[in-house]
Image (tube, rainbow, N blue to C red; front, side):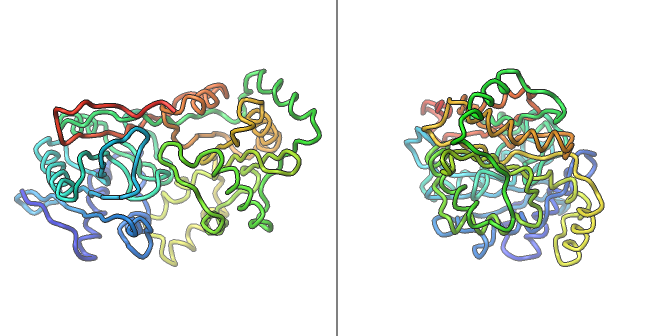
Length: 386
């Protein structure tokens, strides 16, 4: 058995192949786009390199066959509520069902993180934002959403046998779009809608600057500082919106206003993997042309919740029901999609979990962010409740 550090493009391609080879016979597996993986490890594409560093390894057996992989990260800005020690990360973990191979991968990551001053490691996580490649799939092994981790069930045993413990759970909620929500949503919507100072609308692609500014206002008030999320500036949001524009469906991105001031956003996107699964990981010029053709000729049946936020002064006052029901008039009324799934919500955020459950959803997936303390005598504390 040997470990090989990824140092060149050929090895980077091999790093990607490990994931494909270990999952290729699973009918629910959807190959991630190669560029989405490579961009994580490209200092020119990933701004996390400004305050962090990472390393990758591939495990090979005595016959030279790849049997696992792992990446380790140090991110000086990575911090969860309640953390009193420096915590590193591991991610992009794949392994055959062999604890000896898994232990070797976790050991090399642990030793590298120790050398870099870390006292614990969380995983599997991303070297970057939490909206992708975050958490181990432990329930709901259905075709993954775009940039959502997908792995065999036995990975849970490999992590827990090594000594990782659940730090927090991440829940995805789903529903059928045609289903009716609880009556209280209609009642609370009516209460807010009767006040003419409230208004709601969906995004318009020809006014992206205005909507980017409004998104920034709501996001920073509602989310910055919670669950390790940091403030976003308008330039970053505008760049994100421009990148989203080719796949953006105006009728599923909604804003609520009070006296023309933004107070809530509900951002959704089509389930991109329904299209990307046909690209075999490639998003070069031919892949982009193929994507545009598939998108134009194939109906996407699911849309995915990405961000839901209400500014603090309007939380608990019916605005959640208002924006959801205003959007439902269009989404349900025009039969745009069949299914809806929310990107994960941390169980440490019971308010958001409650909103999701009250919509009449069911729990479609569970992922877990694990933590391993290097000092095995230190008390383990899960993520605190917000």
